[in-house]
Amino acid sequence: NMSKHRPELPCLVGAWRRPPNDLQEQEVGGGHKAIHDDATAAKVGLKLAPIHGTVHWSQLTPLLLEAFGPAWFETGSISVHFVNMVGHLQPVRAFLEISGMKQRKVWMEHLDGRLVFDGTASVGQRTEMTMAQTKIAAVKPVKGRLLFHRHPPKTESLELEDARIDFDQVVGPLFPFTHRRKLELITEFHPWYSEEAGASSPWGRPILPPESFNQIMLGMVGGAKGPRFPPIPGDEWLEKALNGRTPVGLFGGCEVILHAGPIFVGEAYQCRRQLVACGETPKAEFRWIKTFLWEKNSKKLVAEMTLQEMQLKNSIENYAELRARSDALQAKL
Image (tube, rainbow, N blue to C red; front, side, top):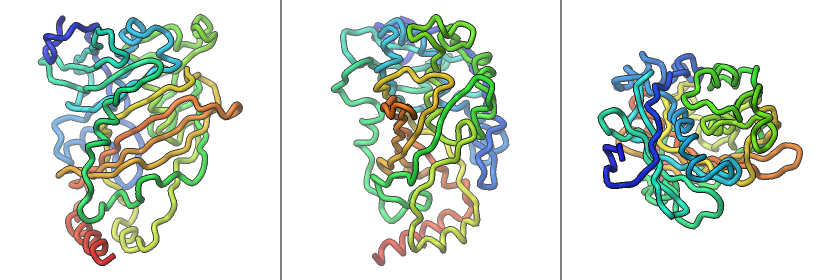
């Protein structure tokens, strides 16, 4: 075993890979660039611009196939908590626990053994709590009222969003490259992902790699409109104060459960979203949001993603003042 973080645990070990930061040109709006941009990362106090966390899921491909077989792409799960950021081309490698358990630990390490992410993976029916479910269960009630997350849990997005990924179309503003380009940069290529050899997959056509699960369910994919939630009555003061500004965001954790995969290239899907929980840390507000992915034609539920979106408080300069007003209004209710 070559894990520095869990030296006692028998595990499958991936190869060292150097993932590129492919989101330096990501467009997020709100009067700022994304956290994946060096200057933006520095402005909010980070030492480096982090790579998009779910990029690292592709490094698990060979380990997931060895542990669970191709069925992982049909009914598998992956659920991670992001711990330490990775910068452009920093070497990292993936690990997957060897055990007789249905659900196994998965994690990734830097050269010095620091965790990149910690999580769980499984295939088929699962009874144990996943990493994300454990984190959601531990969310503490908010004192006062959050500034960036105004909807109560269980709020649903207003309409279905279209979602599809094609080889030669730019994935979207959040992923400013084509799927073909992504496959040129991917840390762990597999022939099943490619247009040339996708017909050799067990499903007879090209499938999406694990890192693209997040892309297809994140929104505004293939030219589609983004998610809309109901307007909040009484929030005009806040809209006016923010004046279109949004906080700088990053992911705290992400889970995908496949119900009837794989997710295919060139297939039309639809998404709907539901708010699961909201909370805060000293530096960030966060929400856990669940996205369901259906096949557009058959209406079959294919997958779900539960994502922790973190918003950095210090990226809105008058955060403390606005939050105090938000808390005071909440106290009156």
